[in-house]
Amino acid sequence: MHELSIAHSLVESAVEAAEKAGARRVTRVQLRLGALSGVVRNALEFGYEITTQGTLLEGSELVIEELPVILDCNVCHTQTTLDGLQTFACPACGAPGPRMIQGRELELQSIEIDVDDTVYVDAIPEASLALPTP
Amino acid sequence: MPSRLLDIRKAVLNKNDQLASALRLRFRAAGLLTLNLVSSPGTGKTALLERTLRTLRESGHPAGALVGDLQTDNDAKRLARSGAPVRQIITHGNCHLEADMVAAHLDGFDLPALEFFFIENVGNLVCPSSYDLGEDLRIVLLSVTEGEDKPLKYPPMFNSSDAAIITKIDLAEVCEFDREAARANILAMRPNMRIFEVSAKTGAGMQEWLDYVLQQRKGR
Image (cartoon, rainbow over all chains, first blue to last red):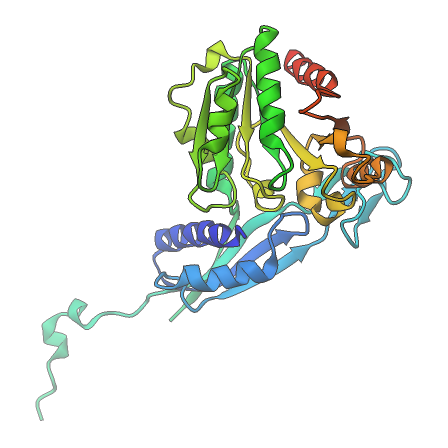
């Protein structure tokens, strides 16, 4: 099970991007996961919950977009989306070397962050805080 | 509190991938062909490597190796008997090697003096498939004692490998190993993949494997 270490890398990247953007917290993380990425969704979700604790991502939602393998055949020029992972020859013509154009993704797509627009009381000049005299 | 959507589109293992690319450049600049050996535990990576290192060395082709292991340095000790420079990476329970572990263990190797560099991954057919180590070739091993359908159970590993070795071929008959089924399953995962049938014990098939390794370096 390497999903914990994958989750760690994911959280690291997301935190880095969030901090750069001045985020208060991250509310949602969108991930693209190819069928041939070698990563198990459930294990990753479990790892995510653990590794986000105590970070800007704590409590955020992990949205995983699962991507099937798509083969592009250089012989018959057919693009096929694979249902499973039990054969990688071109399903249309049987040629052995189709190019894989989707299926290996393990990609941080986007994050949704809360940014702070609160004006702190300490930032307001004292005079304007004075209570109106009755 | 206002929220914003930040578009990132970055590989999660970006840091590993970048480091692996840098390693690949470094290995190639030193004139090395680098091979990452992957398999389940007990397939015989170390036995194959021991014989490979020894034979390459005896035929004037110096090779070195890095060996990953969860806890022990037994494999490195074994491999050192071949006379080749070998170092152990103990992962302390981590189930795969990452590029930074490889980078951290290269001190002490005289890379330009070598022609081949082998990285024996941790025995595991799942996790190592996600991590590029800067190798030129990923070689997946399957032993005749494991069952012919193993490739179908581990598509990411077999699909991402460049060649396959069926090991312990001297035991094929005893195990009633169905070679044709195994070959068909490997080819289903990666059509056109080169397949070797080898016994590191008897030496059967070793020459074909070594010819391939030598050829691959020449071809680059």
